[in-house]
Image (tube, rainbow, N blue to C red; front, side, top):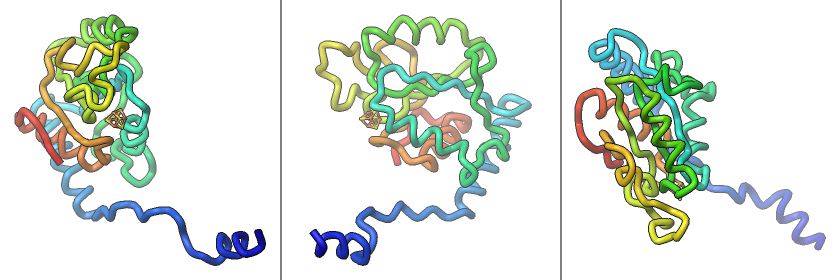
Length: 175
Ligand code: SF4
C-alpha cells in the first residue's frame, strides 16, 4: 500500500498528453471562417447543436470550442439556443428512435437557407451503434446532410476545419 501510494505521488503523470495544437493554426482557421461567413452570409455564423443520441464525447469536443482556449466567439461563431436563429445544425450521435421526431422538428424550425453537419462517426455512418435496435442510423437517414465530419470524436480544430470546408462548399471533411 505504501509502495503504491509513493508510486502514485512521485511516479509522474498517468494520463496521456493532449494533442499539440498550434495557436497560429487556430487563428488562421478561425479568421478564414470569419471571412467566409462574412462572404456567404454577410454576418456571423450561428450554430444550433443537436444531440440525436451520442455518447456525449462529441459534445465535449464541441463544448471545448467555447472554452477560453478556443474562444470561437472571437471569430464571430456562436451557438444559439433556438433553431430559429441558426444557420447550421450540428448533429451528433446515431439518430435514436426516440430523438428522430425532435431532430425533424428542429430541422423544420430552422429557416432556409440552412446547412446540416453530421459530427462524429456515429452521425456519419451510425458508428458502433449502427446495428442497435434503438437507432434509426446515421443522420442522413433522417435529414439531408451537407457535410460529414468524421472522428470518434473529432477534435475541436477538425470541427472548425469542417465548418470552413462547408462554407467553402466542399461536401465532406475527413481529418
Ligand atoms: S462518434 Fe464516438 S464520441 Fe461521437 S457519439 Fe459516437 S461513439 Fe461517441
